[in-house]
Length: 356
Image (cartoon, rainbow, N blue to C red):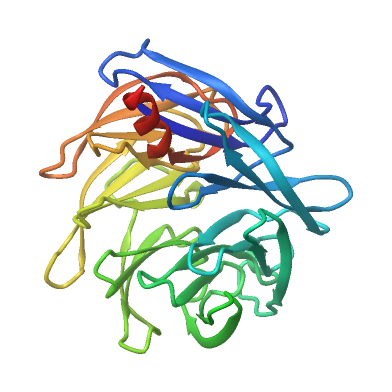
């Protein structure tokens, strides 16, 4: 049995944040779903490391911001605080344990917000960082901050500016406050969207939304980034309209050997093998996502399965994963997950239920 937390839009039938329990991945009927919280468009979520706290973007009126929940003894979540400071809701959120810091990336405003979650479970806004660089494509008419990822030692925050074709490297102090140290320019029109850091702390992998590529970055000893190479997510031989494609999520297996990248509109998952000596990538598979607009993906806790929800399909797709070679085999797409654009594993809930 494994548990996942789902977030997404609430324009149609979705009501907010929900928890998905899958009893047996091999059977498409052994699952259940329950509501965690009714919330307006919780499009990105994250958990504290121990699973005690759940954080979500909140789109409220007239202001938006972040909301925090605490897990109760029965496994449910109870709101403990919310902090609303922005005119427009963010698109991504990540949590730094050491300073109890939350970093919210705002696509529409081109800003990065830092919030502090104190020992009394109260949220406080600390910083708003503005960005002003733009690039050559219509979607890049201004800075568009899409994601912030922590280095493996949590001393650096790497921020993707899709609108400015750059990755910003911020040094993090003991309070979680940020100081800009580097602008790494990416190729014009690439549109850097999401970034993952390899567990060895030496490599980073970036999905470029507009260029439909995955880039390999090398992390220097001083924490700054170096662009090394990029790889097409869409094979030229495939009979798809590459102009319609749009890179979305990127996830790394726990052993650091395989990458999974979703591409919207052509509705595809690309699988890369990571060279464990050099960090370079090799595409080993492309496979249909079996739904419309795969925004996110998530490996199961055993990593035997990959789950892919879709923004415009009512169901998520389940793939069997082969840990030795990283390849995927489609199983079914019958588990309800309407308007889902974010899925995260919830190992704390799985452990609690297994103990029961």
